Each structure stands twice: as structure tokens, then as C-alpha cells.
Length: 623
Image 1 (cartoon, rainbow, N blue to C red):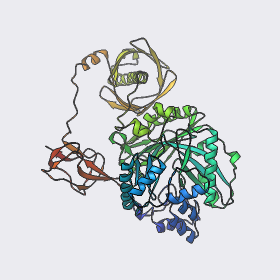
Image 2: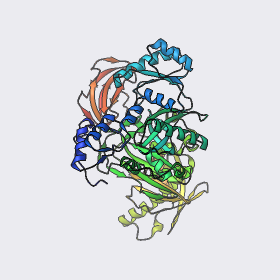
Image 3: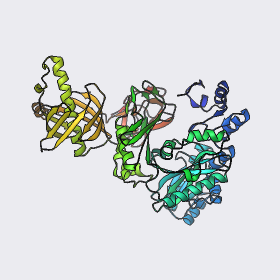
Image 4: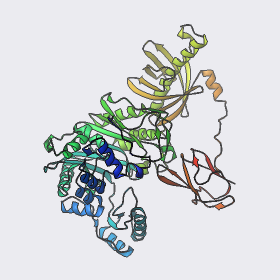
């Protein structure tokens, strides 16, 4: 969408996006008088903001002092306390040793969180429920913080139970004006990375929202903040809220705030950087409807969310704009035929929906996810669909532990209920009839007499089998099940279409369609189904066929993702124990250690350090 693009260097971020000179050079080359730093890379780097100031280029963000003050967890918490912001009970001073850590933990009261001051991304963080865990956690956090951040300062605070992650969006100008634009709930997260966000929160009441908003404004004003920023809180089951940190940049999830307030945050950031006063007051800020954002990641949910790289052989997001009772917005930077590389964050799109109510926004999101076509890489669309249908999410009864609690063994796909299976069975039976007419015409078996195509069929999917009869007319088909139930199906699907937008008994049903022998591969609502549509005689014979067993790979170590072998830790003939490191694979700048699942002896090694492997390549074999 930009008018100009400037090459800033190779893919490695240290040689391009993190290089001050390259970014400033691009600004000068285009005679730009301001730089918006986006979400990551240099967006919270005070030295970059200083470098821009020295060059006379405006930084579209807060002042350097605000970035520095909020960038350190200990400093920011002290400032928050002084500004009257509710903070988690804890000890903010330097902790000398494990004995002092235990003493402080007892004073605060277990459970406690032991955290690195310079921490981020979940590193240098431990929860302790007793003295022994406090002693061990202090030392582990200290070591991890030193190696990850070069800063081993540790603090301890109360661990909040039934925690929800709720953040307040603030907007301030250089003329002393500051407003809060309500809240976003970001409790659905994995490994401290947000996956689903929504605005407003289904949990807050108006009094809590007002208190959190006013305290966030007080904090922003205490550090002389200007531009858009986010004050993050942890909220317990009784709506007690505690300050976590302030993000001095635009958040990835800012669209949900824009959708419910009508305020364009990026525009406001640019206006503030230009010295303009805010054009809105707190009284102008309303909540209109409900918005939800789902982060589409290049991560394979069936392989414990391991990063996935490769070419996008198909990338077709749902149409933006009105969809049913709501609105669809998709913020993305990838395209069909483009490559997802190992150099950057795996997020490839932010799919947002808005509707007058939360239930309607969820329903619009379900249909938008179903119609989002992504092929060529592993991605989390099925998982997002599963979350949108999960009772704990739809009821709003969620905490930051939602994914860990509901998917402790990882995501293994979705088992659809009978009502959903019947809807898909009816739709695919009608689709199969259209395909049969096409096949009959091509082969010469049919001369515009559609009655030659049979009416009785068997639809088998997800272990279920439905005998159906189809009565077709100009407007669609009535599919009758063996028990007498009928479903009316209509749609304009034609053979070869990879997306079917159907109507089943007045409700939309969106299916991703692939061809398999004797039926379809159907993906819908997080389920990936093989649907076989057969004549009664074919179904009878199919029941007699032996089931093909998958190959035995129990004695092989397969590469779980496309990546680079960094090192191999074992050799042929070596006996390995359960849990022992076998090799390290790097993808998307994350190192993944592959470990032995059981005791065994290495019989063959097929890869060496420096090799690039594809998914399921055999790295080594065992006796």
C-alpha cells in the first residue's frame, strides 16, 4: 500500500530492520520527516529515538524518557506506585541470595512469582508455592536472566490466581491531554504470546473499567507520555487489578480498539508527533459493539505449534467489509506465492471481526476463519476455530491458563458433534450430486436428464455413517436422513472450487474443499475430515475393506519442521536414555532440542550439522 519501497539490506534483522543507519538512510532518501516504527524491532528502543532526534526526523512514538522509564520493570513499578496505580504486592529492591528470597516470599505469602527485572518473553520467570521452590526458582531465574539479558536483577511479587490479562489503551498529546480508549482482553495466550484479543472485556464492569482507565492515564502523565501506549494489568477473579507493565508503542491488537471506538490510532500517533492536540476528550470515547482479533501464525498446531516455513501456495483471506451482521478486517503483509522465511516472527495475519454483540462477533469470526484459505505451510487456523467454539471462550470464563488447561497434550484437531456432522453430510451429499452430474455429462452417460443420477447415498465421515436421499429442484436440494430428519441445502459450488459457501436450513456453512478418491477432504470449524460419498452398494463393499495402517515410525527421529540442523549430540551405536538430547534444529530464529522418547540404541544417523531438512525427513534411526 506504500507509494515507495526502499531496500534496507538482507533478511537478517541485524543487517536491516535493526540497523539505525539503514532506517534513517531510507527516511532521508525519501525526504521523510517522520518514522513510524511499527510494533517491534526499534519501536521501544530509546537510542533509536535519540538518533532520529539528532537527525531532525520525528519519532512517531513517546519521548525517550518515557520509553526508558517504562522499559525497566522495577523502575516502571515504582513509578506506577507513586502515581497511585494498583500494583501487585511484592519486593522491588535487590535480592542478595536465596535465603533472602525465601524470607521475602514468606512475607508476601505464597504463591509468588520470581521474575527478572529486564525479562521478557517468559524468560527468567518462575512460580514458587513453597520455600524449596522459592530457593530453586531464585537461582534459576538469576542464571537465566544473566544469560538472556546480561542483567541478573531479580524481584518477587504475589502470584495472582485466576489471572486474566486485560490492558488499557491510552492516547496522549504534548499539550497535557490524555484519554483512555477502554480495554482489551488478551487472556488467550500461549507461552506468554497472545493468540486471541477482544474489546471490550467480557469480564469488566463499568466501575472497574473506569478505575483502570483513570489509573492508566495517571501513569502516562507521570512519565510525560505522548502518543499511543498500552498499560497492561493482571486481573484476578474478584476484579482486583494489578499493574504489569506499560508498552510504549502501538500494540499488535490495536485494531479491536479502533473497531469499537472509531478512533484511528495510527492517525492519532502521527498527529501527536506533528504537535497537534487531541481532537477527542474522555466524554467522546464510547463502546460501540464488540471486536475480536485472531492472530494467524505460521505454526503447526498438530506438532505442538512448531514454526512452519515455506511457500504460500494458496493465500486467500476472506473478503474485508461486511459479512452477515458484522464487519471483517484483515491486517496482513503476505501474499499468495510469497515465502514465509525463518527470519521473522511467525505471525502472518491479524483477522478481526466486529458486530453489535459478542456472540455475533464470534459467529462472524467463525465464518471468516472457515473461509480463510492458507496452503503450503502449517498454520493455526484449525486451532483458532476450535477456540472460537470452546465453551469456556464463548462464555467469557477464561484465564491466561486457558490453552495450557484445555489443551495439555497439545492440539489434536476437533471432533464435531452430530448436528455439525449432519450439516456437513447434507452439504457434501448435495455437492457430490453436482459432481456426479458433471461426470455423467462428460462421459456421455447423461443427456440433460438429471434423473439418471441416483437419489440414495451413504455419507461417511469422522467414524459416522449416514444413509440419505436427495430430492433436488432449481433452488437447491432437500437431504433426508434415515431417521426422517431433513436439511435444506443450497449454494453455488461447482466441481473444482476449493471453497464452498453453502446454506443449510437457513444458516451459512463455509467449507474448504479438497478432492479425495470417492469423496472430499473437508475442513470446517477446526475439523479436518475425509468425507466419502458412496452409493449404497459401494458403502456395503467399503465396510468389508481392511483399514490401511500408517507406517511404523516409532524407531525413527523425524524432523518436526523445515529447519537447519545445528548440532547432533549422539553417534551410531550409542545408547540413549528417555529425555536425552539427540539433536538441535533451528527455525525462525528459535532453537528446538529434539529428545529421545524412550531408551534405545542409535543404529543410523542420516543428517549432520549444517544440513537443511524438510518436515518428516529422517534424522536418525534406532535399533
